[in-house]
Image: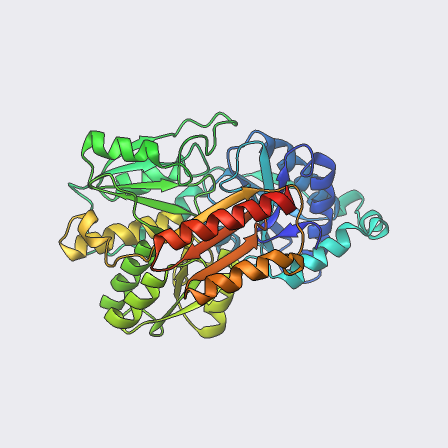
Length: 446
C-alpha cells in the first residue's frame, strides 16, 4: 500500500498529509464505512498538534459530503477514541495524530465499530477508494442528504470512568506521590484527573500544549525530564506518556527508567498472581529481550509468543490465540479485557496496582529479571532497498547467527529509518557487528 503504514497514514503535515489529501481520505473512509453503516455516526478526535485543525476540518468536510454525521471531541488519547467509538455506537472512529513523532508530522488512524484498528484488508479497500476519483465524485450527497457535524466537549468523563474501573476498588492511591509527564499531548487534561480522583499526590510536567511542543524533549520518547522531577519531589513512581497517550514509560522511585520488557514481565506477574490471564501465554514482538522470554518460562510457566513490531499486530495475534495480555518493548501494552489498543493510562494504573500489591518499592517490584545485553540502532535513510537484495548483509547475519546471537533488522513503517537490533551474551561482539552493519547501511542506503 502507498498510503497506509504500520499505524495508519502518517507523514509531514502540509506536505504528504495536507488538506486536499485529508479531504479525499474523509471521502474515501466515509464511502467505505457507509457500506455497513448502522448509526451513520463517525467519531473524530485528535492530539494537540497545530496541524490537527487543518486535517480535522478537511476530514469532516469529506465525511459530511458523503452523508455522515460527525462527532468531534477534540484532543483525546488514541485509546479513548477506540473506547468511545464503541461506547457511543459509532460506525467508525478516526484519530488524527502522529503519536510519538515531532509536531510537524501528523497522521490518521481508523477504528472499526468495535474500537479495533483496521486490518490491512480494510485499509487497502479505503486506499483503493481514495484513488478512484470517479467514485469520490459521484458518492457526494446533495440537499438534506448532506451530513452534519457537532463538537462535544464532555465525553472525557466517560473515558475517565472507564479507566478508573480497571483499578481495583480495594486499592487506594492516597499517600502515593506520582509524577506525570503528559508530553504536551492528548492526555494533558485526562491523565492528571484520573490519578487525582484516585487519591494520589500528583505532580504534572509538560502539560501546556501550544501546538508545537508535543513530544518536544519530553514524554515517553525523552523521559529525562521525568527522571529529574521524580528525584526532585522524591516520588514513588513516575509515568511518561507519548503524544497520543497509547505508550507508557515508567520511572521508579530511584529515578531509573524501567526497561519496557521488564515492565511487561512485571505486569505478566501481576496478572498471573490475580489469576487474570486467559491462557498461560502472552504476546510480545520480535524486539523483546530473551531475558523476558526466559523469565516468563522459568519463573511463571508462561509462554511468550512473538509477532511483528506494531501494537495492531500484537492485538491480532492476541485475538487469534485467545490471549488477553501483550505488548511492545516500546511501551505499547494491551490489556484486552479493558482496551482494544495500547493505553498508557490503563497500563500506568495496572503498574501502580502491582507495586502496591507487592508491598515493595517500585524499583524493587519492577525489576523482576536481568536483561540479555541488547543494542538498538536507528539509522536515518533516504531510500529503502529490499534487505534480501543487499548481498553483504547476508554474510554479516550468518556470522552473527554462528555466535548464537539474535538479530532483527527492519525498516520503520512510519519513518525513513532502518532499525537494527542485536542481542546476545557478549556485549563486545554486539558492538563489533553493530559497527559493521552501520557502515554497510550508510554505504548502500544513504
